[in-house]
Image (cartoon, rainbow, N blue to C red):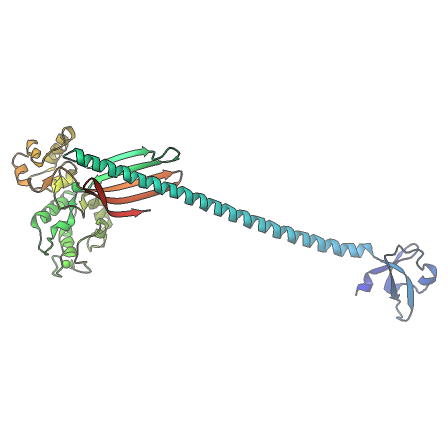
Length: 354
Ligand SMILES: [Ca+2]
């Protein structure tokens, strides 16, 4: 009822219109009203037309409009604040994502440059030297380009320093006893269960005749395509794998680079090679890397054994695994790849970037 909100300003008091005295017209008319607009108002009996000028009670009107205005202002302010926050966050996220993307692209290029440096080192060494030494080469803090705010680290490993697990089964499916026995010696030296050799053999060979209980269950019946495939072989635990992985590979022809092999792999060469003998070989090559396979005969204790190893050892690797890590702040790009020396360059046998 809007009419209740109106008051008539008589001479000295404000009177609600519904209790407005009928004498108003004569006494006040428009004389005492600070009117806004002329209206018609009815008294309680609803039959008396009063003429005059009334004004909207400033109290009632203002109370309402103030409240509404305040609520509206708060709502608009909240809405604007929400929009500004949303917009700012969106800009922040997009800017950060763009910055990270750009930074990661740079890191990717830097890591790729690291691999090229490795290729260069490998191929130059291959053309100049008759041997590759040592088994692992580490380079830290490389700066691939001047304005690069970060660094690249490289790890190059000669895969010929490791035992190729695929060689324990010949391509025709027969067991390669020499390689199998070497694998057994490696497992023994690492204090791992020697049944792993049979499980690996069953994994590779095409038949389903188990060498151990359940060793043909869910086997691939094909060669390993990566070392971590060992984790799928039944009977090989994660702990076994972690122990074994640094000394085995799936690359190469099975011959071991005596300039690169670590103690466990050297021990796997023959029953007669124990830890002491292997350490002697390592000390020898630290002073003078082997130029030819027959140089092994010069190592004290290898005069006889060395002869039996001819044909099974080399002094130069042709396949190298490379890890190139480009870092800047908290961002990092890693390239893991395997390169095979081919002519004056190298071919990529495996590549993954993370
Ligand atoms: Ca099999």
